[in-house]
Image 1: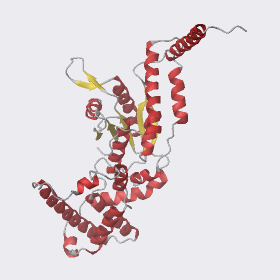
Image 2: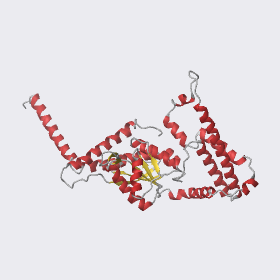
Image 3: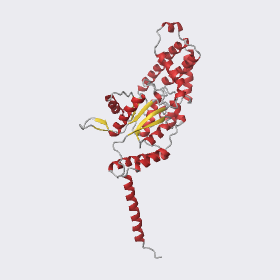
Image 4: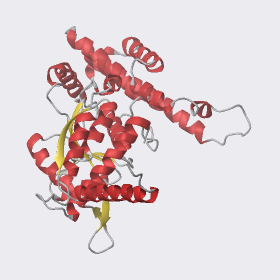
Length: 375
């Protein structure tokens, strides 16, 4: 057998590679490639909820009006207050409810005064070259663990504060006769209703979503070239939101720096979205900051998630890592796939699919290095 010259073999290899590359390019412009990528992502990307992170949502009492910072002293004081209120309700000691509420108000006032004093001291000029500050020492700790401790009532620091506040609510001296003479604070009925709702949540958590989370898809300039408005990706997600909100009537969380513009668009269509997460700059921050917002508002273990089909698998995984189960609702893309023939609009879908596939591989193997821990 005559051995081919190396130049001939090189040309043969180059020809085969060129043909394969041409076939791949035709496939990318076809309507099939992006669909195959989505099927692969939906099959292999895990969406199991992280049970440790899920504890931050376990109260499942989402409220659009809750404004306490998670992990703050006021937030922990409220958890202690609700715990004692629940115990009083279960023991049918209704007379003790108003006393606990009065002590809780005194506790809130005490915490707010202490915070005000701390803020005044922080505003004073600091003398340089003294011992290393506490903030410098905290900076070397693992930020991920710090966030977990922030959301965990059973962490060492939070548990100690919880026990301290419970003791205050049980023993703080207060004139019961004076409490009896004062008019009943209407918020006590809201707190009682909240406790009853929380006790019923375990029966509902398997099937009930608590909010609609809509991820921003970008902004653009209006036709006048001056005003900033939502782009086509975001607009289509908001149009899907209108239909879902009409069906479920749930609180809406708008996530991304686009959130204020998304809120304005929905307002123009007679839908009021009150929960804005407007700090996130990428998908990892979308999921992390939205989960913190939901936890701050009372907790939402399950949400309806609205984004496009290519973005969905990676986003669902990130929300699951932050303790939230998602019900996917796909918003359409600005362009539609053709039935058979290759076209430029098919390539728009393939390019989006490739980006999400590579981003998912990066997230799974290396994590998101550009994702801040807290907003």
